[in-house]
Image (cartoon, rainbow, N blue to C red):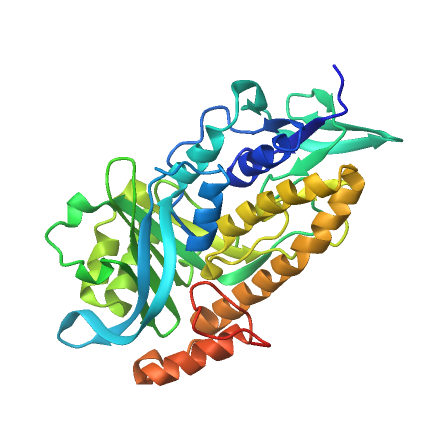
Length: 393
């Protein structure tokens, strides 16, 4: 077979599927290699995207017009208040975003690819070069020539030598259908998402589309349970001691309504994730890195999926202008790396100022919050805070 237009894409999640669409539109023949043997199912939590990006992805055919989403327009910050189950509203501001389920976003992209373009149970363990020839090495011992490569295999990418840095806190997460909490007043989540503040972290609560109806998604950023290792993570259930630690944390530090939402999360619906970041690689030769393989941003910036999708849009646009693959790779890094570095730095600042060294949330006025967030952004534009001017504006 003529391999002049072949592109091997390592990783079949959101970044890999979007990159495959991008190169195919420029006449390349993509093949996505995903380590998972089965279809990626409804894993993970909700995904947050800027509304203009959602509209662009729809207009450019990456997403279907009917891809489920929920629009939010405000962010509400709460602090505990004696006698008030929901907490006191300390700050509320405009914040436009499109929320969807991870599964919806992935499936919208995956459905654009043919069966021959997407190959599951194909774990890539490395790359080998022999002069001008490059091959991918697979977990089953097989090899495959690869003229052009896009690495979209996450922050543990086999194409990165520098490893991510862990924060000294974790993200506790849960997701379940709202039928279970129909007896509770969730009016604050109508068209908004809520942040609950406590002395050494915060929680975020939102309603997102799910396969079987609306789901509640929540995340609490705070300390790890005793005995939990820095990199330890768990999906679909936690040890009883860890779940007990989480419930105690929520019961002591969240307003009663939001603590109840955490406590009603089923054992199989709880998970814990280390918080980490990874700066962009300065030089990866003619290998393009996309998504978390290119740079890992702490989740406070709500930019992981958005960055992966913007990576794909950049690949599509640049491939049309630079048909020479090494030149495309160099130009792509020149375009995307500064944005990735900006987001990594922003994610670190948000984590430091909202979890590691937060302010005295309950003593601040609304103007105090606005000034504090402006200092955290430090001139960096962010779609969740469009009313805070970026540097130079």
